[in-house]
Amino acid sequence: MGSDDGFLTNSENESPWSSGLCDCFSDMGSCCCTTWCPCVPFGQASEIIDEGSTSCFGNALIFCLIASFTPCICLYTCSYRSRLRRKYNLKETPCNDCCVHCWCWSCAMCQEYRELKNRGFNMHIGWQENVQGQNKGIEIPPTVPGQMKR
Image (cartoon, rainbow, N blue to C red; front, side, top):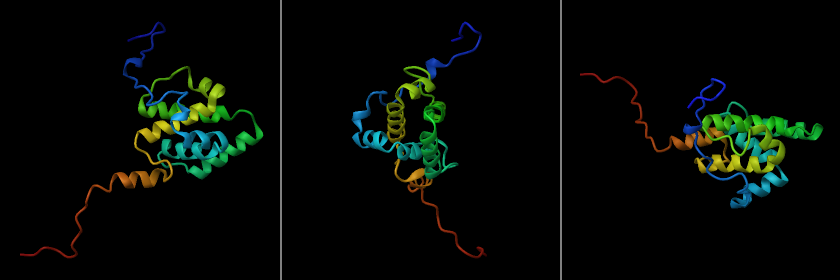
C-alpha cells in the first residue's frame, strides 16, 4: 500500500464515481444547464459540497465574475471537485482534478452534479432543505408544559 516516495496511498479504499466523466447525456437537464448556464449547477453543487456554509447565489456570482474577467474559471471549479472527492473518497480519475477541469470543465461539472444527485440530494432545494428533508422521517414527541407531580 505504500508508494515509492514513502507516502501511503489509499487508492484501494477509494470509491468509483457513480457515473463517468463523459456520461453527460445520461442526464439531459443537467447537461443542458451546465452547457448554457454553468453558474447555476455550479452554485447548487458548491452549496451542497460546502454543507451550506456558502450560498448557491454567492458561489454562482463568484463563478460569473471569474468567468467574465479571466479564462481561469477551471482553477476555481477544480477546488470543488477536490472537496467532493475527499468528502466521498472518490477516485481521482481520469487525471488530477485541475487537469479534468482545465480540459473539460463542463463534463466535470456535470459529473459532480450527477454524483450529488445519485447520492440522494435534490439539487434544486439547497443544503438546508436537503438536511431537513432527511430528518422528516423522525418524529419528535411533543413537550408537555409543566411538571409531572405525584
